[in-house]
Image 1 (tube, rainbow, N blue to C red):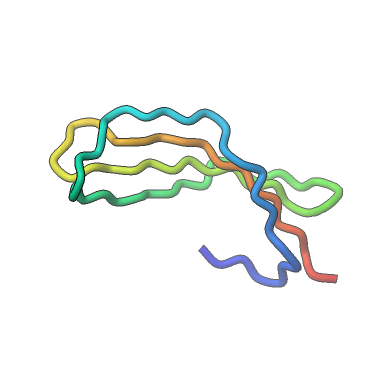
Image 2 (image 1 turned 120 degrees about the vertical axis):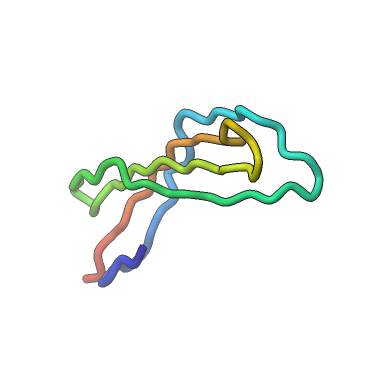
Length: 75
């Protein structure tokens, strides 16, 4: 993902975080990010996304979390 003309991005943190499958030492993982919302605010755009960490060979993901960030446009 690329965001142009941005002065800064502020990490608002994580919302719902679920650890579903333990990852063994040496386990191979892959993260998939899906943008689930974008809302204009007085400061910029608040972006919500869902991060899913998949574990190779597992039926369920290792982690599912919702993230929030604020993108402030350049002046």
